[in-house]
Image 1 (cartoon, rainbow, N blue to C red):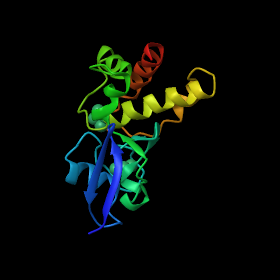
Image 2 (image 1 turned 45 degrees about the horizontal axis):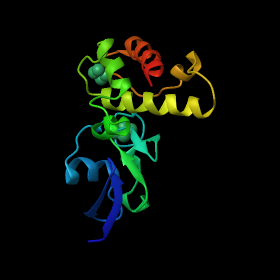
Image 3 (image 1 turned 90 degrees about the vertical axis):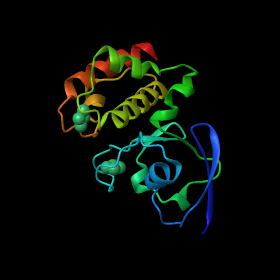
Image 4 (image 1 turned 180 degrees about the horizontal axis):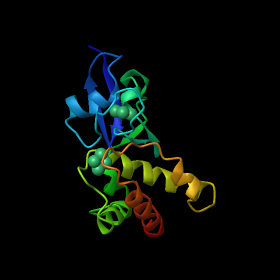
Length: 158
Ligand code: FES
Ligand code: FES
């Protein structure tokens, strides 16, 4: 089988897997990191949201063959390491606002939130209500109000 190398949570990794296997299954089933959740598999629910080179992406919709050797993939398991702490500031905000209910969507929500703060910072502005309205991560438990509050707090801490 073809080999694919990329950087996962700051460490190079090589996997032996067919080209058309989606990255989410490589991360979950081959590497064994189950933070990115499988919801729809078709880039709709956003439960698998992780970061590709610092930006939000959905690994259920990316073939492993389309990931380059220099690409840096970060999952919720590696998020705190990006700030060299036990928890990322956004995770601390999540705990402060007691956001999670069943928890299934929450890794993806946090990864989307961090990517949103980074994006608005690049644009030289704070997160607006419109930005929060634009988050497409589905929460079947309806924790949306607490998610919004935690993102605003997390932005302050980042
Ligand atoms: S599982 Fe990736 S977007 Fe739904
Ligand atoms: S906390 Fe249950 S799906 Fe969001």
